[in-house]
Every structure is written in structure tokens, then in C-alpha cells.
Amino acid sequence: MVHAIVAPSILASDFANLGCECHNVINSGADWLHIDIMDGHFVPNMSLGQPVVESLRKVIGKYNDPDAKLPRAFFDCHMMVSEPEKWVEDFARIGCDQFTFHYEATKDPVALVELIKKHGMKAACSVKPGTPVDVLYDLAPSLDMALVMTVEPGFGGQKFMAGMMSKVKDLRTRFPNLNIQVDGGLGKQNVELAAEAGANVIVAGTSVFRAEDPSDVIGFMKTAVNGALETKGLYHE
Ligand SMILES: O=C(CO)[C@@H](O)[C@H](O)COP(=O)(O)O
Image (cartoon, rainbow, N blue to C red; front, top):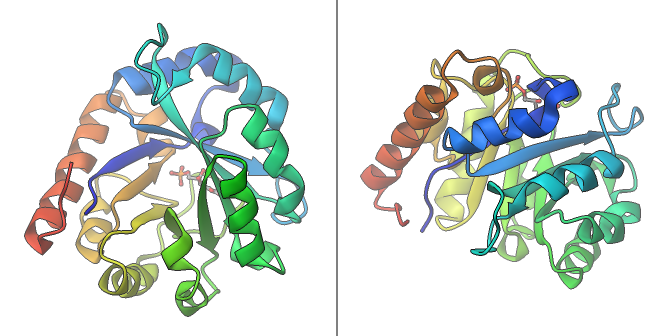
């Protein structure tokens, strides 16, 4: 059983004011922060690395720490990097809660999931638009989340690929209790499509960080996702 989770992608934030920007979306209802790590090799762009994530963790409490005096959030780190294995230890140390690697970036996804869990993080696996979803079937029972990319990874602000919804539907039918994330080009105009397909974790960069009222966008997304889950009999808080 799953529920709506909205994860604003900090790639669309004003990096000069990153801490304040993140506090603002958390106070507007964001559950997770989606942190895009790009190495300029797996994808044709660079974003930020562990020093920035470590600094951010100092101003954002752990999601499961009831005593935290700071706004709290789950750090959902999307590793768009070659050789993701190399970064598991570091990201665990700096406070990453979930480590999402790309299926296309590793030779041994099973071993990588084990390594991520051994380091106390949740494990997730992502597929690019050109990768068939069936590569995830065997792995899914050991995953905390599957990520179906709805743009080519590398840049924010791209157009949502509605054709990816067949992958989401397929996964939701096979794995009713799995967190299924969609990422790229999502906003109020297409979140219902993703929700109907069965996605419950919505990454939204531009549509949240550049919104006049982020709480309106986040609230709309949660209502759409939870409504669709209820219709399918899958909603659970
Ligand atoms: O991983 C990526 C891009 O590679 C995404 O997380 C984008 O950053 C989402 O941004 P918007 O499309 O919502 O602006």
C-alpha cells in the first residue's frame, strides 16, 4: 500500500539560496527533496556533489528525527553517474536517505542494492526512456522504489514523455506496493496522467520551485495521486 509523495527537484532551485529554497518547499508540503547528482559522464551535464548535500543536511533535519529543530525532509538522491558503486559509502555518511542508481550505469544491480542497504539507505533503481521496464522485474522485490524517467536525464525543464506511462502501468500491475517515481516535466497539467498510470512519487522541479505558490502545486499533486490510489484500492497513509 502506498501514498502520494511529492519530491521537488532542487535542480530548479536558486542554488545561491539553496537552504532557504528548500525550507520554503518543505514548509509548502514537500515530503522529500529530490537531489540530482550528475557527473558530466553518464549524462551530458554536471550539477552538484557531496559537499553541497552535506551542507544541506546541516540545515535540514532527518525525516525520521522527531526531535529535529529544523524543517525535516527525506533526501532522495538520484545518482546520474557512471560507476554509482563508488559513491555509496560517501552518500550514506553525509545523510542521504535513498540512493537511486541507474540500471544502465552498473554491471551488477543486485550487488549494488545489497551494498546500498548495508550502508543503511533505501535502494532505488531508475530506467532511462530507452530502457525497457522488464529489466526491473527481478530486481523490484528487493527495491524500495523504481524510477521511470519521463525525460532524458541530464536537464531540468524538459517536456514530459507521456509514452512512459505504459512502463508505470506495467510496474504498478506487477508490484502494487512498490513506490513508483516519475521524474521530468511534471506539473499540474499532467500529474493526473501519471497518477492514473500508478505513479505515487512525483518529482517536480520547475513546476514547484518556480511556482508563485508551491503549496498549491504540491497540494494539487497529492490530491491527484491519492485519489487515483484510492480508486485502485491501493491507498495507505
Ligand atoms: O533528473 C532530472 C533531469 O535529469 C529531473 O529531476 C529534473 O530536474 C526535473 O525537473 P523538471 O523537469 O521538473 O523541471
